[in-house]
Image (cartoon, rainbow, N blue to C red; front, side):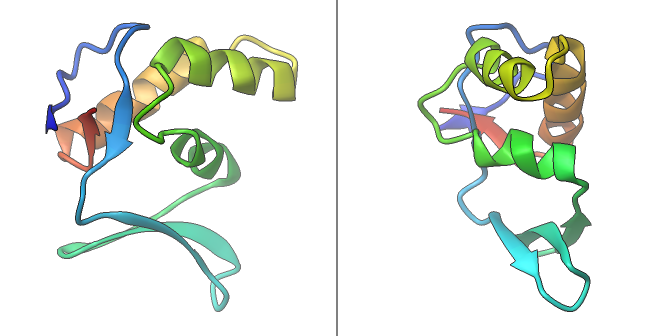
Length: 94
């Protein structure tokens, strides 16, 4: 697994950094991304994106699935969100 280039393409296959994990915090009643140095509080959209980052789906496939779910083109949002996490090295290229 290598660091994810912040300039994502549709063919990029994102996966969470091996020390990060997606979880649900029952106290906060929201999804969180936990990693050794901290926690990222996720909104529903962020959680939906990260749940699809399984190391098998491309960015394009993730965007297509979410487009079908929400009924609008979310490609730019998916790329922007994953790029931000890649800058923090929380998402990598499978």
